[in-house]
Length: 518
Ligand code: FAD
Image (cartoon, rainbow, N blue to C red):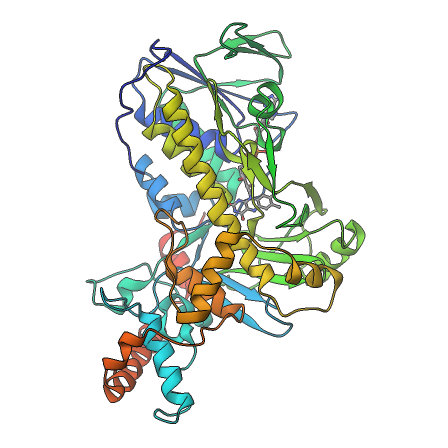
């Protein structure tokens, strides 16, 4: 996690003394832990959470950026995995998204090797072209996944963290975790409390605002306790108690792009060796997830209530779950979109209170992390400054919009027309920003991610190809690469990836040796 000085504050120039965080889910404890690690000891941090309300309790799949957050706190990977009964994740397998019976893998890590001149996938596109014109054997190019170590290792159920120098194939892998998010929050709580964060149990029932500035002055708990602060961090989940209810930051609704609005979650007992990846299986009215942990498998169904009802979703979830349910199905409701201002007055919303995009690419915890990181980068230690607040809001909005586009791609590029839901998402209007990306890729195979885009060109490539979006051509500059050299080198690389993957330890063995929970 980057930290930068907060710069000179204008406006209200009183120094920060007290911070109140409302909410003790993953977001609340991430914020508490990070602030406890970085802010001066003169700042007192209190976190209030309500046992009566509890936490949302889902959010088990992560992406590689969480490593940066854990590094910032000084938490070691194997300790996190052991404590949170975690497994390793090399990517996501998408089943039945393009059409029924089809699947593809969105890996972390790289396809081949990009050079300053060419993106690797342009070489692959040219090789396909050579096969089509009879200048290379028909199977010369193969699947793009054959050039990605995460994909091949995942197919074999094997795992290794990246190793070796930059030219080693094993250096191209990347990974994330599947974790029990309740245990992760507990770990962060212990960390934060050890660094002086005060935790209060209680339900916030009221807020008081300064009549002149409109800032939040204090929150009142049901037992009458009043907690005053200079800065309030709203981590109250979908309730958005402070930013939404008290300050009225408008909700920007994206249901027209992403119509899923319900989920059901159910754990099952572990069933054999855990695969080192998340599975996302498209279904009649949405999709199902399967997330392996050491002690259970998380299963869920994300669906649109406009297209199927809860009974059918529950039946489909249980039928498709990975074993006998360990509990009843838990229903959840959500709205896709975000608060127009994530930071308003002296209140910053982090986590679900700021917005939500369905968990298809496991991005929510990452968005909470970005909220915390940017708050640290713009720490209002000497007061609030409108330019900084506006900058924070622009950055967070851009994060949400880019992730939205990426998620919409999975739906809009489907060929499925076997249910009303799929006919709807396959024909809906898509954001202009996504349409432009698709046009460029179809024409020349070029992918130019926006600066700061969470998803690299490799991610876009995986999902565009997986969803059947295939370029009509390749970068013409590649015509100067001799065909024979291309055929030879691509075969060497493919063989190298296959051999490297086959030599890796099994995922279960890796866990047993490094991070098995007692
Ligand atoms: P919550 O966990 O809801 O916490 C809210 C906190 O606020 C609680 O402590 C609650 O007690 C407190 N609170 C609320 N009101 C009051 C009050 N009045 N007084 C006092 N305290 C109060 N994310 C991922 O990254 N990966 C995933 O795989 C993933 N899967 C998901 C699947 C589904 C179906 C859904 C809906 C979400 C998923 N998420 C996922 C998102 C993830 O669950 C959240 O980002 C994460 O749990 C953080 O939630 P939170 O802390 O913002 O809110």
